[in-house]
Length: 352
Image 1 (cartoon, one colour):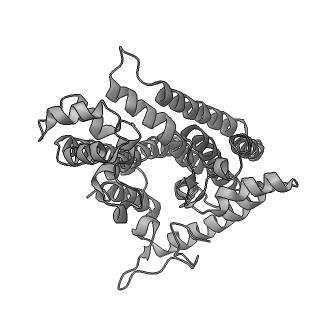
Image 2 (cartoon, rainbow, N blue to C red):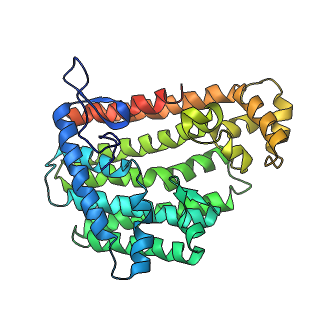
């Protein structure tokens, strides 16, 4: 199994040379005992995940396993397992809850690819391109149903948390699709979309882990809030990387959001009048145009990379990460807390 705590071969996370730490999530140093424990938990998650997407119907079984077998970092299940360290990490509901959040995440990917008319997901043909939009939508629905089945055994509180998280996911998608109302601040609208569409499920991951492990209520609340901030920070860092990185660094074509007409944090700062960069007026003009063509896209990308809005976006990212860190530092000083604060460091450092 490949995960954030293992190499490509699925071997246990290696101990860093000359230290008492192992290579943990995203290559960060982590307590070796914690790394081994979370690795074991992720193996249990993978096993239950495969069991959960099984179906007697061959077509449904194939479509359901499509994204599971394509891999992924299992970031949300990892957060569940880390958060469970603040209580009893071996509690019966922890692994099923980790599978619930991953199934929910995977289901949203099936639906997203239909809405975005995507052809590739995780290096594989997307379900909608391999089969049809109808098959992709119904497969996503099936994964939501399988998540609900697992939730039923976790109690009414878990069901309610998941339902409210799912409502936020849908609201965020609708808000992104419709766009900001004329009376709304576009930047505030964008940040609300990020919080609902991306950060809400990451917050629920932290909440499930802490809650189902029996952590004290104030720990549950703190982990939930900090996890949401980490979720927002990850999305903001992706926004910055989409503009600033090269293909080798990010694994994606730079300026994809620009080309697709998606306005992200740096673009909102430009349009709000932040700073005065080279070619400022021209950049604002370009941001109001179709940038699917290579020439205008390249011009806009170059101007945006040089604009002070990028520094403002990085400052916003640092603020979200530091706010998360400040909350995390009120938690008990255990290795899991260091792993969480390490994520705050990582999300900032990855953008340079």
